[in-house]
Image (tube, rainbow, N blue to C red; front, side, top):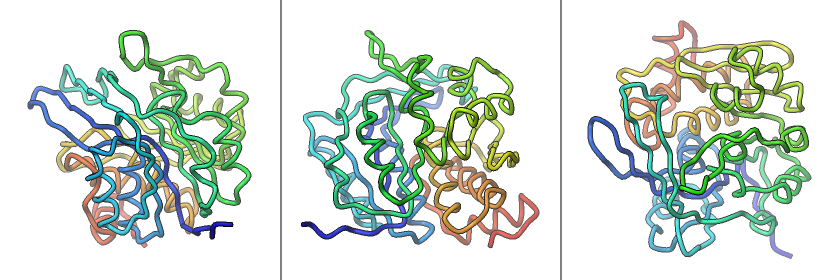
Length: 300
């Protein structure tokens, strides 16, 4: 029997090779929710593992995670997930995502020897993480959290990511302790534009806590209470990875702090991430300073 490896958090998701196109030009960024989230967890000093699928030609992503102290568990696939993110206007929430290749689906055996205080499922589209993996992780002892994007987004016949009503949500959502969504995804699941009403509807389907990001900030519904904090980047540069960073920061902070504190922490971490392209490269001191200066409270 292999020895189990205890972590504070295990993040899972396909690596995405992102091509970002906006009015400022075209650039290549190493994406994937697991990638953004692993940088958050290591910034916070947590024992971190990243389980991913990618082409061996993109091994530099694994090496970069190893260099910051993440234990990476890659499965090599014929293709990495190639994603194109097109921002046609100055509104950073108005974007068109398309996929030309995908690294495929996870299987339960990729997690046999992994134990953690929290697991974070951060897939890009439906089919990447199916119920067999979710139920397997649920049987482990850690908090189970997930980003809704990996279930409500599908790749249509033209390769464009679009939203689907996700008929299986009433079956899947009860597995999660924490569900992350954004305003658009929440509307696709509930039909409700009001984010507070949408969060309550989603909580009614099973997850203990709902983390809902929107253009201006973060709403959390936990234990029947709502908590909110704004995003305050100075300036806004890197929109891509906002939600991935946000949920990772929230889950990591929830290991030691109540929802109210984790909400402010996640908003501050996300704000700092949005000040640059790619995963966050800041420090805990930077986050604490941001909170003290912009959120009028201690970052401890």
